[in-house]
Length: 156
Image 1: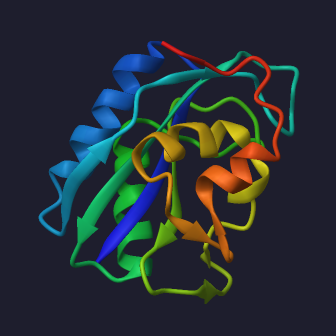
Image 2 (image 1 turned 120 degrees about the horizontal axis):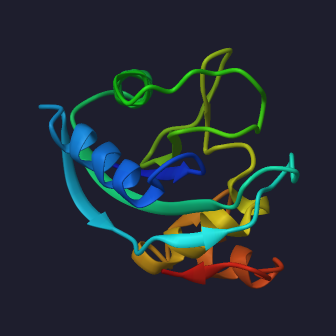
Image 3 (image 1 turned 60 degrees about the horizontal axis):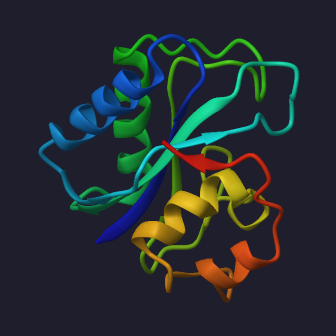
């Protein structure tokens, strides 16, 4: 199945961390990288008193179910040194499952599509680069993005 992931970092060598995250995902036998967006410098969202982020998006083909894909993302985060200390706080790496083709999930571990995907320009800008016509929550990515403020988001 096709799935879409958001990647981000705002600690250390952010570009290298995104590259390492993508390589870690691609190394999983159940995941094949299909597309990767450019990297984008983005202002922090939610908790704004922290460094800016580098964000991107990837499309993957996966034989993993949605929870298995989440587990793979969490393994890569762990392997790259992610420690969850503060909600929306600084992080060396963040990998979010944004959407999984044909799946709607809402449980304690995972909500698909991601509950905030259509509210976050830092997610939709890179996602629109690789999947502009993807429909999430009944709305195309490019149409959801058109409603949002993109101030400060720049391709790097």
